[in-house]
Image (cartoon, rainbow, N blue to C red; front, side):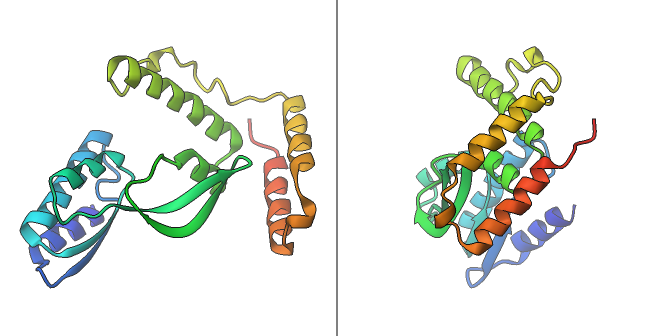
Amino acid sequence: MVEMVETAAILAQATERSFVILDEVGRGTSTYDGLALAWSVVEAVHETNRCRCLFATHYHELARLAETCEALSLHHVRAREWKGDLVLLHELAEGPADRSYGLAVAKLAGIPRQVVARAKSVLDKLEKGRAETGGLAAGLGDLPLFAAAARPEEDTVDELRERLQSLELDALSPREALDLLYELQRDAAPTDP
């Protein structure tokens, strides 16, 4: 509600001389409600307020607004995946992002591995359903509940072994090595059943 009130105040008070920062307009709503709200806010800021605006969003669909809003300029923060990990490049580049890094960010934030694995299987099913039928939720009924949650202990040990063997130890800074140890310790912590 706070974000909605702030957005309402911005739309009511911003002028051509304003500089506005809007971050994730529409979060906390359903997917389509959020997308529709973010879309209409961009249009209002562009057409009515006509102010400068930095608008951060995860709705890739909003990139299509660049076709109709002549003053809209799309940019993204560059990122790459390297050896299964997300590397934020801290560079601003023109154009929309080439893909979503949501699951990689979740992993980076410490979301448990089994939850990220489950999210990957749900995402694959959603994308397959969208490609086949154009519907967002197509095929979700076929997903077994938390199919990816339980991993046999041997898989975890093999995964750890592969990860350790792939490391280039001489290329790691002391800080990177310490961060890696903390991450390995976190991954090795027992999870509640």
